[in-house]
Amino acid sequence: MNVINKESALEKLKSGLPIIFQTDTLPAIGCLPEFSKIIYDIKKRDSNKPLILMGAENEQLIDYVDESAKEDYENLAAKYWPGALTLIIPVSENKKSTLTSKNFTLGLRIPNSYMAQSLMREAGPLLTSSANISGFKGSIKAEGISLDFPSVDILGPVPWEKGSGKASTIISWNKSGEWRLIREGEVLIQE
Image (tube, rainbow, N blue to C red; front, side, top):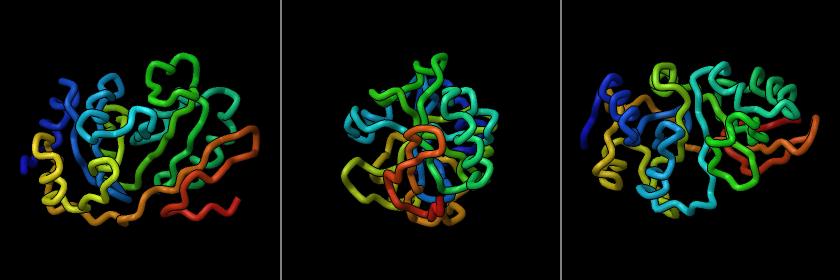
């Protein structure tokens, strides 16, 4: 298991490599948006399954939101972030190069995790997925994850602060004032 500090993680990310790190829910594998193909390769993930763009603060994510969804996005972001809610929104025209979906949407999230926020505050937003081989449950501990991904560095210190072990809730924006539940997870949505 190769545990690295934040400075080394930032260097790896800038060179196009992914990093594994803890979030408030499940451990994540993440990379800078321009290098997203590597996550699909390493995880053996279906290229039709989009990744989630995580940020440290709303200022890093707001430019990705299309004007049509901005008000609804800001209302839910203010209420539930940082936290275990992923918002799927139509992506703004100037950020379409970030897309990993075919329907011009992007999942956004700000995790309630010091480790994740600290990394992304300096690296910028990261395209992420849970740190497991696609189709398999995987471990929630750094030691187990390193067995699945021996070539991917792990952000320390280890052992990590414990995450919830439950995936984020995912909701998708349909139209003004209307969201659809995609996956029930950590957050219960009352609206």
